[in-house]
Length: 628
Ligand SMILES: Nc1ncnc2c1ncn2[C@@H]1O[C@H](COP(=O)(O)OP(=O)(O)OP(=O)(O)O)[C@@H](O)[C@H]1O
View: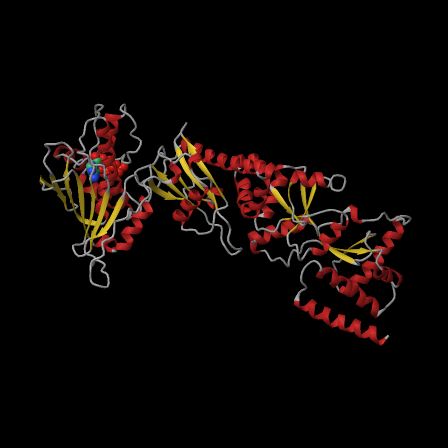
């Protein structure tokens, strides 16, 4: 065959059902599309007027009205915008995927700002057929002599067009709702959908129910109420940040998220170059410990809602925040809820991350007291962010705060400086300040504080910090005995020490009936404590990690973390044990068991069986005391 060139053709009968039914993921999107068209029609008219090409006859009251008639099963979208001539209906409506919006932009691109135009693809109108069996258009162009046009289509590929009867400029689209549109016969569904997609559209939107009984007062007189627009035509995020008050920010938050807790603080995003982006991000207050941190960032494109929580634009960790972002430059595809995958989107996401990091840094530097006040609320989000996003980590790592057991907030740097000469690049932490109180007290006696890391994110957080900064290590307070707590074992040679350990091991092995009993003998500075349990940091972390991910049906009992019983040579009970080692004494047994249980108790709750024995033994010991 000789080489040929040609144009692909589309068989409209086959492709039309796909456009109508499958182009948009959500059924309710037709409301957004038809209202957007109404707003575009007004924007175009205003633009032409400003260029001296259209006469408004003094009219400035632009609006889009949605009217539901449940009896007639119709939903109308009425605007007083530019309208269409019969030629325009033929061009823009009869030709699918030919956008009048694009055409307008092309013609007027050199004549001022056309940013506000929403339409792009020339397909949105047809979303009406997702819910309607028949769609009618009644339109009249702004052009003085152009006759009104009536257009009607029952969802097939044929349409009817004739002279219309509309007397005013603008367009009325009537949807005769079919079975697929049944849900839109509900006043509340329509109202909610308008509010969901169109809250910030640039012209007032009104909603009426035509067949609703009018409200009457007690004398039977009809109460006439001023209609109220459902939207906010100039949302706060479009204003200049320096023109907004705190009260306005809080009010916008309450209205937009229906959250009556005050946000902690906010960031007003306002960028014109290299891309246009406006928005406000709020740091919400965590209410109770039962609250899940669930944020919500609403993405808009020229004041039209696109979707919630779009991961491509909003870095995942920022999804814990609440906010509104409007980016008219977003590369959206037809359905608008999906983004085209391109480097531009990545740039937006980086910009947002940078702004959040800058805000946190400026709070830290300029108002440390406030920053500390917010810290408990924002720390899970900040920690999650620095684990997830390296750029964020680099900007924020120096201002991460740690709350100490003395209720102060310090950075890692400040903690280390405070403990110079006592701790070498090491941070002690507690995961449960009550359970680990004994260890905290011991450290405090040596003027060492621990930091509280008790959130579920903290184990991942400290591993991340250790990986990034290999000169800092975190140790839980019960993971070793600090050198600070020990006295030098003067005058005791290695051989004697080994013998003592051997003797004590025999006593405790027998008393506890434990094969694997690891002992450590220390000369602690404090003479108050007979014994303590310590758990190796590494093996405990490994165990926690396996539990968290329940690796391979892991049973924690199978691999207990390495537990060491530290005995304090200075304590009279340990000295008693050493003195009576080798004797077959019942008291020795009782003492060893009691020492062990007390050490476990100041570390974690006893198992039920061990608790029963402990209570029995304690009674027995007291009985013996009074008998002697
Ligand atoms: N209410 C209206 N008033 C005036 N012109 C309208 C109206 N509705 C639709 N049109 C014309 O029909 C064209 C096609 O509309 P449609 O909604 O299919 O696509 P679009 O708005 O251009 O793009 P998108 O698919 O991105 O929404 C519009 O560009 C516009 O020229």
